[in-house]
Length: 108
Image (cartoon, rainbow, N blue to C red):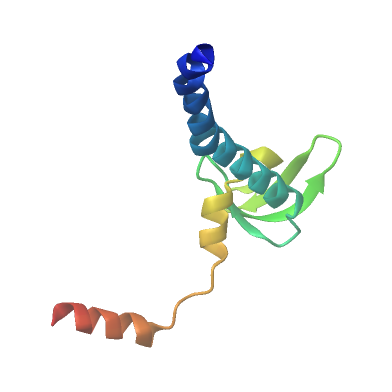
């Protein structure tokens, strides 16, 4: 019994590390894999390096995405597409009336 009480803090530390560090990272990695697999033609995306463009084709052979930008067509790996930035880019625009009303209330 004494040995168990000696190792209890170490076991508790591993449990805390799992629930606060390892598990959230695994969940985020799963969401990014799902996002990359659900990409389709016509989606507007942003790469992790900051390149904006629209998906025009997929290269299943190389697991890549062909993106049309202002400079032309560029091939990127699917994993280089930023999930957070692409979701923000594709969100519907907020109506101007609401944003103006908020600005007026904040000034008062």
